[in-house]
Amino acid sequence: MDTRVTGIIFDIKRYALHDGPGIRTTVFFQGCPLRCAWCQNPESWEAQPRLAVRADRCMRCGACLTVCPNADAAMSANPTAVDWARCLRCGACVEVCPSGARSRPGRPWSVSEVMAAVDKDRIFYDESGGGVTFSGGEPLMQSEFLLACLRAGRERDYHTAVDTCGYASPETIMTVAQWTDLFLYDLKLIDDRRHQKHLGVNNAVILDNLRRLADRGQALCIRVPLIPGINDDEENVAALAAFVESLTNQPPVHLLPYHRIGGDKYARLGLPYTLAGVEPPTPERVAQVAARFSALGLRVKVGG
Image 1 (cartoon, helix red, strand yellow):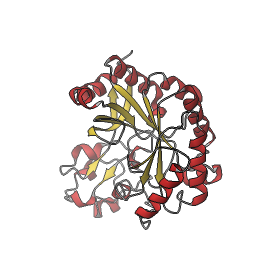
Image 2 (cartoon, one colour):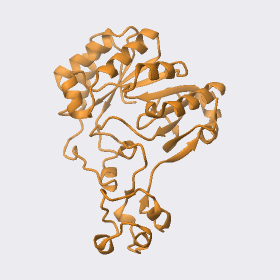
Image 3 (cartoon, helix red, strand yellow):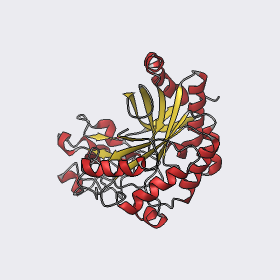
């Protein structure tokens, strides 16, 4: 294993309780091929870190103007105004901001650095049956780095999980599977036309990869976000349940009701939040969806 391999990580969260069994450390990889409107981590979408601005923290000191190569009159009048199309993502403004109003989530990490962070909570993994989960973004987009981290985890006898949308080549996902104890596999829409409309990519490879993993006997947990008006209709719910029921090992299903946590990030990143007016699904609707899966003999849980 080459610990010199590097990748871009935008966050590491300790004591995670919803990213696999036990107490875990979750490592968030930069970059994602999907564009889910409900995403809680839009800062992870692009392969390179994007500037984030918190207007409520800005002191109007103007330090950012002195170092920005594209500073203009609009920024002089309002330092929180960013021309996102012209931003070079150089991070110069982040370095001089005294209040933390500007940040640039994500930086290169080595495998050794990642594992040093993960190793801090070894005792909790041992006592709770936990381990390390690689999430994102989409960790399969940095497959070489992911594999190196998984191998390092295996050397330490950690339980390893990969949280994925499944959008990768079959060769990539099957190679990763050799070093992964559990896949947390997102499943959102079965109809390809709707999938392309709401997520930006087709779903043929996603469904095919899920079948491949199931046929391999891979430990899986299917995660289904419930987004009102997008994928919670009867047609899609029935199609999702039927697809999971058809899998070789019929993995458990976790229903994840939509909520607005993470919505504030979009404004900080200069991105539109198109679901601002969408209400979370009612408990009654969530129970109905759970019943649809249970009726096929599937194991269902609401929440991570």
